[in-house]
Image (cartoon, rainbow, N blue to C red; front, side, top):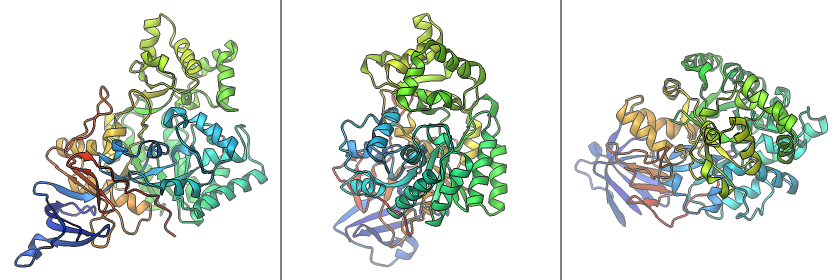
Length: 534
């Protein structure tokens, strides 16, 4: 054996009771599990290394079902933000916008569109254009494992462009082909960002056709749907109906009910899902254990203002008449980019900027910056959008704790950080999601039992990803595992110090190798691309 973990409390990911055991690892897999009762009078397994884990819990590695590490994994080989949380697998390609498939034009446009999420990529060698090429790039060596969703917005950008119009039949066929090629090359499904352009311009009929392709390969559809605000329930209903018609599995991204109009309405969402599940729909969802959201400032704009892409947006913002029309939609009508709810500038906190000259804005709400400058909030927001060339990220303080708690208890819930690693002051969920579940919502508040919570973070997402040998502590399974102290595990990250690392997670193994050892990052790059299981 390569390693024996002795006298550890095994929380195996099934949701069942924990048990004391010795767990042996060989060749990157779990080779033996000797339970305490079964070990009485028997010879205990031996190995080149023995780790005394008295007082620690052992679980499968955590699976981040909603990650924005598409470039961070290439830029930062250590990737401690996720590895230190016990994350051993991330799902990339989220919200309909990522970097494959693409041609040269599309790649340049998508890099510009999501600079706020991932940086402009000037430090990355974009030596791929296909999904398979991107996955091959990941296989050269990354910190944690990664799966990929085909981004529908990028696919539409490639085939149709930035126009707000239905696709022609030829364009739809091209999109079908791009999705099929991506699935054949290893993607696990398709994502959408239906409050982001140009993906939001796709009608349901177009999305249904693409979902049929995904379903044919056994993948799932992961939409950031059309509203988390005024039309949230209708937007959830739309996705349930669409995937039912397409015969496609559905995974709802960062599934929450936000803004004042949805306070206390999580039970309405859960009733909708329960009815669909009872009728035979295949549905899962993910959430992060925090109330604020995180996105880009430009995402708040109405969709008509974003047609044509970044340069067209900037031109509209510079034009006084069009800018006033944008303000009217944002502040008085409620733009579709802000989920149909009139924007409240005191809830919009700048978390990052691309231009270092604008760093004084970070950590302040738009309302506060406007007050300091003695001007109206829209004047401040417009200036920031133009001067930062749409690269600013925001925290949006519009969530409700009771909704967060209710949704995380649901039987199809999984964990996802939605972690954006860019910016001076990122959302603490990027560094703290998984220990926050274990510390706050398990130990401190008892919203979930430890066994339940671990199942939400391990076996459930593994089942959605159709991984036959991950997500459980079982003999023969891949040795992606986390050792943590249930008495002390906690997120170190806060809104004031969002890049602080967790406590109480001394060891993390990927493929049987330590990526976190004694609380410190090693130089091991054990991750690889996890391709769709046929």
